[in-house]
Image (cartoon, rainbow, N blue to C red; front, side, top):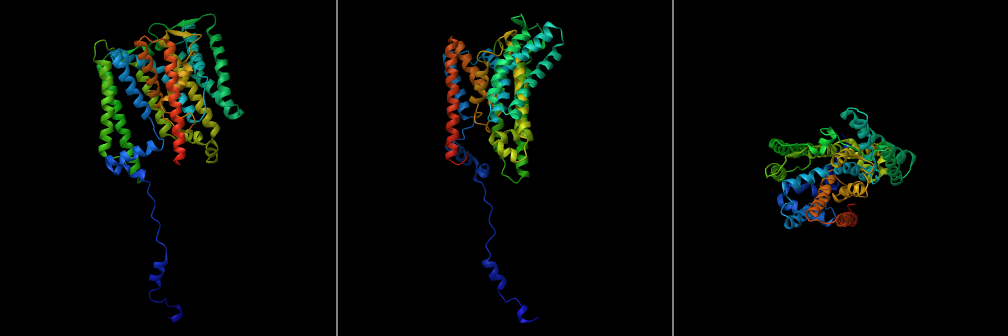
Length: 432
C-alpha cells in the first residue's frame, strides 16, 4: 500500500479529540422528585406554589376551615345525619357539575344544565307517573332526551359557529318552556312511593358491611391505580413513586374512607350508606377514567388548551365539542332525576333558581379553570362538598337563605380570583 493511502499514525486519535462529545440528554428535575425522598417532595411542592400550580390545595384548606368553624358553633355538624345530608344533597347537583367540568375543560360554558335537568325530570314524570310507562324505560328515555338536547347545543356551536354562551342561553330559555309545556296543567307530579327515582335519594344501605365494603373497595381501587401508574412509568423508563409513598397515600385515603364509613354507620341515629353517594362516586370514577385514561379525554384537554393546535394535530375538534355538550346534557338529565327525588316530584320550576349557579360554582371552586384545558373531574365532588357543607352549616345555625347566597357567591369569587392569579403566576414563571 502506498504512503498516499496510509492513514497517519495518531490521525484517528486527533479526529476523536476534535469531534464534539455526544450531548447528554437533559433530565427534567421534576422527574427526579420521587428519588429524593421527603426533601424532593417538599422542593416540588414549594416550586409548584411559587409557580401558581396550587391544584386542590385551597379546597382542602377551605374544607378544614369550614369543618372547624361550624363544628365549633354546632357540635352536630359532623354528626351522622349531617354528613349523610351533605352526601345526599351533593349527589344530584354534583353529577350535573361533572358534565360542566368537561365543558369548562373545553374553555366553554353551558348555561342550559338547569333547564335540561328540568326537562329530564318532566319527561320521566309524564311517562312513568301520568302514562304508566315502566319506571326504568321512562328513566332511559329521560336520559336520552338530555343527551339529545346536549348534542343539539354542540351541533349549533361547532358546526354553525354560534357561541356556546348564546346557544346554551337560548337552550336555557327554550327548554324551560318545553319543561312547562310537558308538565301541562299540573304544577307538579309527585314521585310514587317505592319508585326507582324516589330511591335515588331515599334509599340507604343499613347493613354496616355496605359502607365499610365500599370504603375498602375504594382504597383497593386507589392503590391499584397507583401501582398501575408505577408499572407504566417504569415501562417508559421514567422515575416512579417509591413503595413508601404508595403506602403513605393509600394509608391517608384509607383513614378518610373508613372515617366516613364509621360516621355513616356507628353513631346513634345513623342510617347507613346512602345510595345517592354510591351513584355519585360511580359517575365520578367512570368520568375520571374517561378524562385521564382514554384518547377522548386527552383530546378534550388538547382542544381546551388550543383548538387550532388540536385541529392541526389531526383531532376532530367538532366531534369532541359535540360529544362533550352531549355528555353535559346527559348528566344534567340524570342529576334532574336526583333533584326530583329530593323534592318529592317533578315541577315546572325544577332546575331553576340557583341550580345553574351552584353547578358551575362547584366545578370552579373545586379547581377547574374557567379558561379551559385545566381541571379534574373530582373538582365536582370537592366543590359540591364545599357548597353543601356551607349550606348545611348555615342551616344548622339558622341563617337566612340570602346570607347563604352571599357567602356562596363570595366563595365562588374567591375561587375565580385564585384561578386567575394562578394562571398569571404560571405565565410569569413560563409554565402557562
